[in-house]
Length: 129
Image (tube, rainbow, N blue to C red; front, side, top):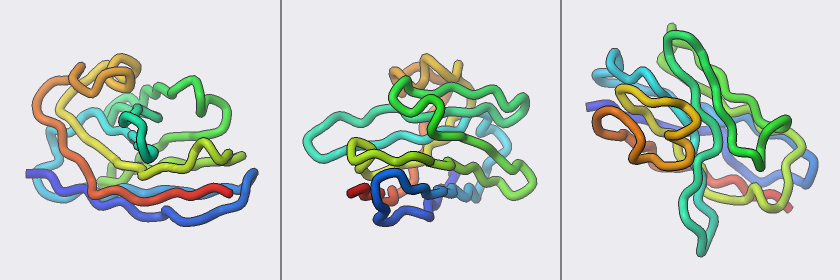
């Protein structure tokens, strides 16, 4: 099993920045696709950004392009979400996720578009006001 632990959430003013981290432990060698999803109250979970472990290919939701950057440090089994120019509509619980394989953009649109089971973190709250 893969365990994922997020950190870095908090409250920030409009226009501010936060960096989320997700540390993976356990059997991580097969987790080749990592990402961030978010869910606001009363809304469905949506994909935010994804990245592949080996090649570092990325994909972003249109709503965050140009503001958010996903990156990874394979030596630490960690991936990050740098969030800049935050807006109130970015307020949500943010979850990191990992799967064996995916195509980065389709996986964001539909978490079912993947290879193997999906592992989720417990979530970290981001509030922008």
